[in-house]
Structure formats: structure tokens, C-alpha cells
Image (tube, rainbow, N blue to C red; front, side):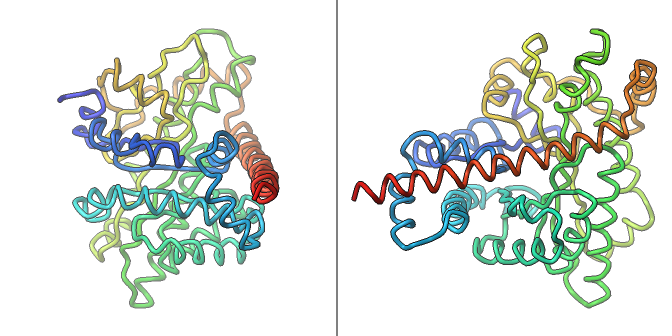
Length: 362
């Protein structure tokens, strides 16, 4: 059936689901998304896991089992997460194999508490990837200034990385530089340059961030303009002599991924960011609600222009209304990191509470 999701897939854009829960796995929901809606990957974050583990009883047996072993909350969480994500990775393994590693990935984030510690982030990334023991599992590392060195070193170590919390072209280019440096170091060391990575640019938070500051004609347009500008830089980088040399040596592109693509404004179309960000050789990871909406009534029209289209003209309009996109990008990245840290702490607290209740009931 030629669904809207299949049309996006056929266009050359990967559609991933931005959610994971044991319920999705047990009830066959994820398998349905793969078979019927052309979903070829999955992303997760602390907020997603906090909601999944903190609500309902699908994790109760596992939490009780692991708590009885005396696992502290953080260790227990990673055990739960790896149980879910390795099962999901196995569901996506046929896609991974059929695309020679281009697609079929799942993602697990390092602790947000390590964001400012390069050495511990690198150590955690290597440890989690080894524990997962799946070739199609990305480790998520934030693309903050302090995270860039951890990204380069992890790539050099052979750990596939999903770079998260990117909010601008400049954030993306810093990430791409780290990725290429890691690959170049591997080539110099005689190592295989085929270490996969994606760079996740957050979209909708831009529009939430400026809604009260700009006139209605500019509502829900800034995130798309930032994406268009970044897509142009992405295409230019892939065409650059430096990247072409790496590709000839066997490296694979760090693909650009659109994140935070659920519509936050009730007045806007529920498929806004999926339809606007159609582009070959990219990924769009979307919430379940948005996926269902797009599968039901989405349309695939024009693709993003490789030359950036009207992005710069539109960004000039925002500047005339007082929006400093560079300063806003830094603020959004900082707030995103703070939000994930808060979710992480709440997640661990919920695990402690649930562990105490379940063990106490035995």
C-alpha cells in the first residue's frame, strides 16, 4: 500500500519513531510500525524512558527482579533500557542488514549528568555499546561545546554516535568536524573508517521559543528555516573535497536527522514538520501521535532545496523582529540539556520508588 510514510521512504528519507516502551514491544506496536508504516529506526531519551517506566506496570517484574539483585537506580535503569533497546534492535536488524548499516538503528543516551566530563562520557559510551552487543545501536552524546571532544574520541574508538541537542547550522558543523576528525584519525591508525553517526537537529523548540516574540505571520516558521539552512550546509559538506576523500577511503556520511518534529502549536497542522522537512538522505524521528497523523492524512510534496531556498530571507525577517538566532540556539541547547537532566533525575527517583514498593510487596 502506497501510504504517506512509504512515499517518504521511497523519497530517500528514513522515518524513525521517537519513542520506546516495553508496551510497544509486548503488544507488537513497534512491529506494526515497521511492517505497515515503513519505520526503519528508533530514538529514545531520558524523558521518554521516564514516562515509559513511571507509568503502568509493564516494567514491574523486571524492576523487582533487578532491585532484588541490589542494583542501584542508574544501573537498574540501563539494564531496563538495554532490555528494551536490544529487543528493538533485533526487530530492526533485517533493515540494518539490507541497507548495509545505513538504517535500522536504535539509540541510547549516556547519562546527562556526564555532559561536562569528556573522559567519563567516552568511557560510558564505550561501556554501554559493549553491553548492548548490537551493531545497530547508537550511543547518544550531546553536541554541546564540551561534548564535541567526546564525540570525536568515541568515533575514533569505533562507537557509533547519535549526536543530540543540535539547534543550528553552526552546532551541526561543529559536530560534523568532530565526526570527520575521528574518522581521519582512524584512517591514520589503519582502522576501518566505516563508523556510523547521525547528527540530530531539533526543530519545534525554535518555534516554541519565539512564539511570544514575533507576529503571527512568523509563527511556526523559524524551525523550518533553520533546518533549510542546515540542510544546505549538509549538502555542501558532502560535496566537499575533504569528505570525498574520506568517502573514497570507505567512510559513510554522518546523516542529518530532524528531531523534535511533533507540532507543539494546536493551531498548526499536526503533520507540519514532517511534510516541510522531506529531504533525501536525511532522517525524521517523530513521536507516535505525529506518526499516526502522517500515516493517516499526511502528504509528500516538494523536497527541501539543496541551496537553502528562502531560509536566509526568512531569517532576516525574524531578525527585524528582534530574534537573535545565534543567541537563541545557545539558549535552546542549554535548556534542552537542563530538561534532560531534570527528566533523568525524575526517572531515577521513580525507579527508586517503584523498587521499594515492589520489593516490599514480596
